[in-house]
Length: 328
Image (cartoon, one colour):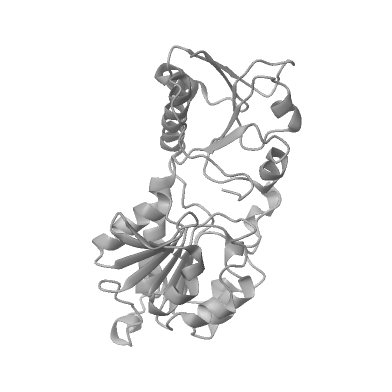
């Protein structure tokens, strides 16, 4: 099947060559922001397309967002184009899962404050009360058991943890890859038995503010929270107060509430209205869980994109479909 594909943003030459060499011969590839209308592409690869990009080709049937997630402005726009299917690339699932577990271990073992103390030649943490939490034999609850959540679950099982999870598409509890997966509505029933609460959800109207003071109060005071989804899934003030007051033992956070609006603000923009950085029981990461070296990250992206495009050329289902109305 002949498939015309347009990439709105042109990759570096070596990555474009790599992509081209990986494609089925029935795929014609064009790139760039400059498009002559009417255009003739069937698939558009873009994270934040404009309306004219979507309406400019009468043959367009698929939008591929070249990362995981659905930007809010893209979701709003795609609601006007219900006949265009939307798909993601999940090439970053592996590094995000690794960072998730790194944050979990760093927070549970209080690695950062102990590192900071020893850098100033202070050995007192070795001889004082040990705040570290043992994870083996405990329970992890993963909110969002998709590509990232399943990888995290496997690693947690390797640590000897029992893994529970929630998933939007599940209506009754089922076993999935060694974890017991529950409907999202079971959240409050699951929280009291959890030592590690791990959030890998996208931000949608359903998930915004999902974890607030009431949910945090259901956790044990020895629990650790890790968020690599989006900051707004956890209510900002409730999280800060729970960590400050000892209702939550520790947290590892890669996603935040305030981001720099321009490059000049990158050196002095607090990630929250609350001083999380003053708390020793928080590990702060600047939204870099999916980061790899540029070449390695782009190669993984090109491999995932080639897989999706080749599936289209062979008239096979494309991976990672997105429900625009739901938001992921």
